[in-house]
Length: 283
Image (cartoon, rainbow, N blue to C red):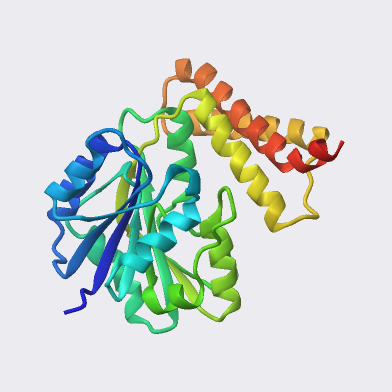
């Protein structure tokens, strides 16, 4: 029998976090599922942990990895009528996460849905602010807004078959996919009650790399987009202003500000460099 949903997880050397995620999935009250792990060259116990929880493991070579390709490989291996994507860094907030995430697909107009991401108590303020601002309470149906996040999401299999993920982008493959899905007439639902905790715990170098990669993707998606030095300065000032507002609103200690501002500057600098990478290469 074909399961209602296949839970597709991308991973590389994620053994400790993966065990926590899979234990949370096992507690869900929606049993008609299968697990598919897409491994891209793990050298730790990631595959053993996945198999211990009953996951099927498919592999791609690290040299062939892109986020979009990993998702496509996972969906191709999956048998479910819907493909659920969840980051190995996540853990469901409760035993209703999966059921809540799948609920919007009861409407045949909805091609995909994504849920809320929450910070853990010891998550760095930089990421706390990003998650709390990016994933508010209040459900919505998107018919033009292209935000979509596949760290906690579901896509109808039939929609993926029509619209596979772009395998050439270095990042933002989820938002590029959302743009095509909306253009094809599908709706995307945001369901905040489908909650997971998500933590990257990235170093400054990792923050820069992620931002650079996504900056490159932004320019690929909109070749006319550019960011001037003046705009970079404005973005820095606004970013710090929002960080200060976040610390005050959520009662975070002021001693966190130096770290938070440093991480914000690194993120914005990476985005700026990524957006303008092509111009500098030509020069």
